[in-house]
Image (cartoon, rainbow, N blue to C red):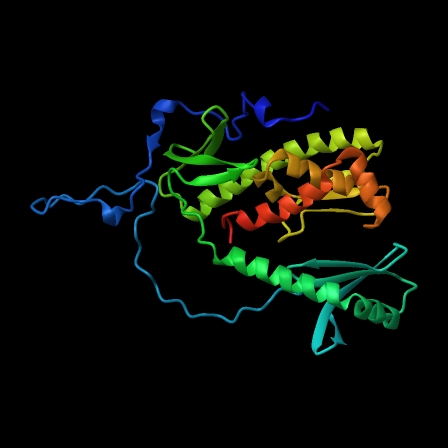
Length: 315
């Protein structure tokens, strides 16, 4: 498959069909209540077709929220120094115990033959590394949550392939989207009365479609370089985990990678493909990554930095 490049999409596919430009109207970019009116005029101010007309709120009796049943096993607890450390345990066919830190905490993967006592001892041996990584993860998450969310208005700046693109809002007979790589503008045509929730859903769908096409193309490029074949590929929406590869060679990539530049996307793809040969993070694994992506160390650090700089799009 021919590799994709941000420069190759001059004829970007209109994902939701075409519509005569004459039927499109620009959306008011100022809130209705900020549009000045003449003090002597009885004519009400114009109402943005993008904003649904106000409705009278009807009191609703709140109902207790019942959390959906979880298919995840309960977390285990271990006293580590002065701390009670929680971790989730998953059994696998791997030969050694593996540790992963994400926004959910510590995840441990261990062979079925390893006892709980051995797993706890391994955690105590790595406790300084684990606790420091957990602290670092909490700080990064707090920093992300402190950032103000994006304002979903005409002219908003959205991250795409390592740079900003401009969101353009238009009103038409049906919802559709199109991207102009020359002007770096993403046009969202929405029906009158469309909500901000619908707008965000349409933008997310566009991001995910772009991610699916680009990621699959780059997977084929790097799989050929490494001389491996993956079984299947899908998108994920994990909080901060950028990719995964199973022993069955099933690869999942976080669609939010589409926010970053292509070299960072390529690093994650090279990383996950290397797991087909080395299902661990040993020295041999990193040597394998280096065969197809020599600058992996710089990319790994830059990915961490860029992730902290992302605006809050879909909280």
